[in-house]
Image 1: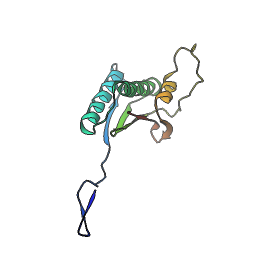
Image 2: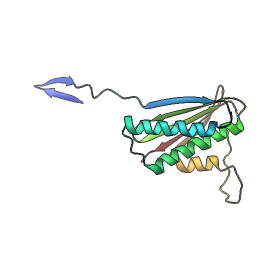
Image 3: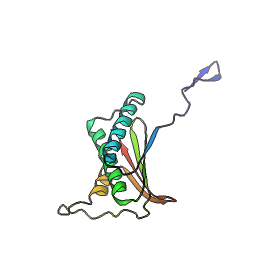
Length: 149
């Protein structure tokens, strides 16, 4: 914000850009890592609520945990090595990014309620505003952006 005093421009300090909240962790695929990732995301959301005044209610919080769970489960199931979970958020948006060592891009299957399994990315696409899948030097990155309200 800028205040004008007798024609002079004085910065108030509130016009400084603010960086989003960012947290990252890695998993090796040991038993329990998917639950740990959901717990990590839950703590991240609480930090967004307290530090960013994010207004995510239980529904949006549940959607965030479901997207984290699906993406981490896919990385755990389809890669041969460690994977990284990154979360970035502000008062109204969270981006979930998972890096894994597999170069195989995930397949999205047509909706089929009779199909058993392989609904993870279908769920992520239904909940996220944007999903980006791309190869990176160490494998692939899947990024899903969700609105919190």
